[in-house]
Image 1 (cartoon, rainbow, N blue to C red):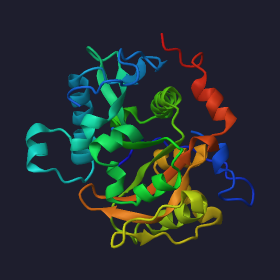
Image 2 (cartoon, rainbow, N blue to C red):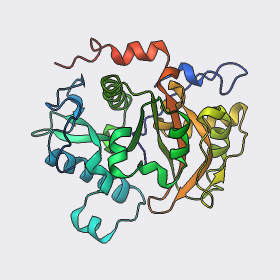
Image 3 (cartoon, helix red, strand yellow):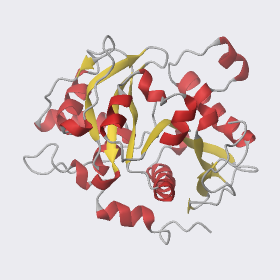
Image 4 (cartoon, one colour):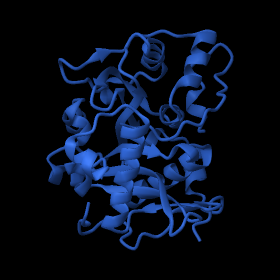
Length: 302
């Protein structure tokens, strides 16, 4: 479940090339495990009153879980369990093994968590018994094909409605990039979610994604048998432009950075979404974005 923001941009698709120019654009533990990145929680980026950093305490992780509940279960159509209703937190067993990236509005009281992303490295996934995304997609096959690569899962992303803007998404990506560099991550992956489970209503977006960034064989990942909804290919010209503008900003961001969209979708009835798998080799990210997200002079951390 990944729905970081709703800011819309007007992409320049390139004349006669409805998908070819996508890569040239850019615009979720109560205790911490030993050896985590940046244990002092330094600020990784700042724009005006917003700052991005990792959660420093169990209290901040709980704040992220409360934000996730507010967005996924109250604003959207996810179905909470009895415990989730009582605690008003989106919490699962994987949270303990993840780092939690936070966007904080420092102008709101002692600071309010207004955006979050959940980061799970491959070594932490081994302790957790696997990646969360592996419940829908054949992630183990992907990892096995690349034994020398370091993988990291991105998930549970969300942003408070009034903060869904370009700058919030940029802060999240700046934090992700700092984390990737610190841990020498080679490959990012995760589910990107389209709101809704009506495949007919989503057919245009799914067809566009089936054509926009098909993976080469080495990065191709299927959904588990019985859950897979193969993506058709289609959507060109003006229809593609309109459909692209309706895609969640997170999905468009992955495409702009060089991500591949897997050949299948999976309907997630609990969260009320239809998920596609995105695989983003770090080597695919263009120099302009590496420079931009690595340039702390643009968004000073202090």
